[in-house]
Amino acid sequence: MVEERYKAFKNADGAQPMDAAKGVQRIVDVVKGEWLAAGREMPLTLYLGSDVVGQVRERAERTLEELRVWEDMGTGLET
Image (cartoon, rainbow, N blue to C red):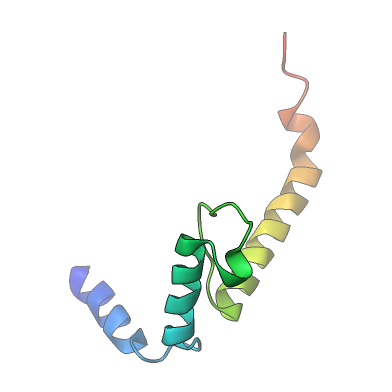
């Protein structure tokens, strides 16, 4: 299992669609509260890369849709 994960990470190294230097600069900006991060509260998770942002958005939309469908099952349980 470890070998498989190592191989996957090794194959992905350098193949990311994001410019690593820009990603690092965004992290620094968030930590320092500068540039696009100025005036914002530090996030619990910082999603970097358009591909990641798209995947997270898609997952959140699926979760919200599931909540809409099942909300009546999860509410009204208070005594």
